[in-house]
Length: 53
Image (cartoon, rainbow, N blue to C red; front, side, top):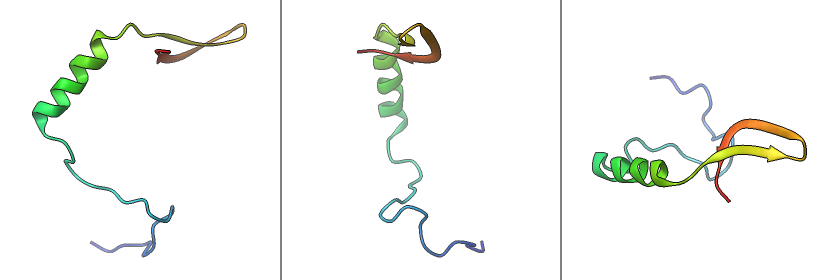
């Protein structure tokens, strides 16, 4: 594969495939699903992003 950009766009940033196992991913998803998330609110606006404070 030809790399068009020899240096990273952001110095120190790199991409890694499969940095967590499938079991760790499932545990993280379950933990997120257990949290009570609500739409992002800023003054009178409501965003589409779900957050937890």
